[in-house]
Amino acid sequence: MTRRESLKFFLAAGIWTLLKGRLDAAQPSSMKDIENLQKNWKALLADGTKLPLPSEPLKLSKEEWRKRLDPTQFNILREEGTEPPGTSPLNNEKRPGIFVCVGCNLALFTSDMKYESGTGWPSFFTTIPGAFGTSTDYKLILPRTEYHCIRCGGHHGHVFDDGPPPTGKRWCNNGVALRFIPRDTKKS
Image (cartoon, rainbow, N blue to C red; front, side, top):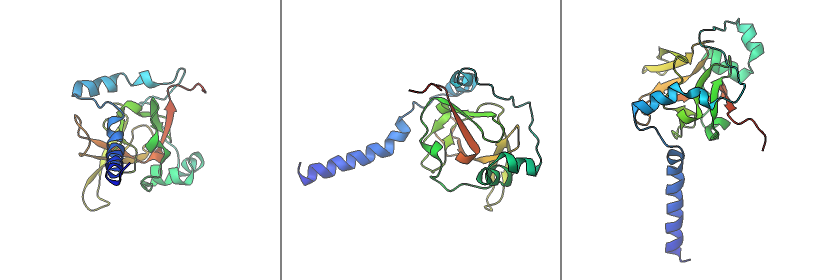
């Protein structure tokens, strides 16, 4: 292989690596597709999985939350912290399944709603309906839309208007605030 051929190969491999994350999953092309994802999210639940409803609030004292969560989870969910980018193993999670709130097990997203945003945090272009409440956050001076679990009030991240079509949304979530439940729980 000549030097020129090697350079072409490495350039093509680099471009493929950059694009691969965006091409791994077929993105919905219409709002009708999004509505179907939202309506049929339970198809990605593992058999026998029982999850709470958004209408079943979970209210705990600060001390009860400290016992229930590890220190990093407590900082993110209860004190609106942010984990460093690129640190969550859920960034690379590709299996079919459901992402739930680590604080209360409420279903928030499915694997079909996830995409690679390149930000270093698990990102989603839509949510399971009714999973979140929102508020405006001025911590970085400019207003941002913060979202929190509707069941336990735990902070999960921020939603931005730079996501893929057709929603144009990027629900940028702290990985530490999520737990992944794979649809196939059988050991291979």
